[in-house]
Image (tube, rainbow, N blue to C red):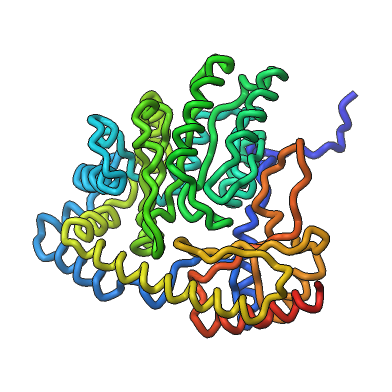
Length: 427
């Protein structure tokens, strides 16, 4: 007999399943503690936001009634044709690849930030109970998408040039023997200056990973895709670029490329994009039509004018210099204040330094180190948040992500000094 006292909820299974994303309470914690130095938020640099340049672009757009009206009117679901063409051209130029068709504007979908693209692609490919293979560690905001949609995870450890290919192959083989390979839909890589580790995946590893996915998809009975999240690609300030997986032209139909204009131009201009193969291109366009039937047209016109005028490229060069300087400040402060037992790497791009303590020293939300750091008015992202719920391993709990993106140079120095004192006492 049903218990008459059982409360019924009007919420869907997805709504009931969805937990509060860690990014929400991390940002709330910053706002609730105005004195705290946040080395947690992945904000872009406030000082370098192109205020005057954006004003000039908007004046250009609204200099005539025709262009002004077009910018203030609805656009198409797929995105502004000019911006799609410019986006395809820029990705092709970055890859230095002339492969016909791969960099077609027809493959481009403009989205409200790359986060929307990640959500829609996952929604189109994965049902509850399906599986996504991830880097260990990975972008923790994407983990919230997987959690809310009831998707399983398997983590692949990172090496200095990307995922451990041998580990990936063993994982795919194990899943094949258990029959779970049929649930695997994609491999998700944050391929440039990875959030959180700062590691860049080599072109060789992308190509080899694609070959492995192609081999094991025969056993899965359906395609297995590589979702390459290139959000930080243009924030390189040292070293040479690596071509994207799109340039591995043997398997371009298995690559989903996600990019953004938020990080390299202005994070408030929430415009992202994807280069997508069929049938995913059509599916995501249809689903996006149900989401918003088109990204904000004014923002798209702003980005298109920035790209066409050369302003985007000039601003990007200044931004790269700015992040190089801020990264140097953080590196100097870490060298001065952190215990020698803490391991970390000098960043060559992106926004983050990934610090690893000896394994016995916990850095998680409930740890003494995290709570003490908060009392000392400094905040970091606990490394445990960056690992998916893989049942084949326990989550590491001795790491932290430190961002030099949003904090000022002075805040970076102060924050690292405070955190260094906490770590020295704990270690």
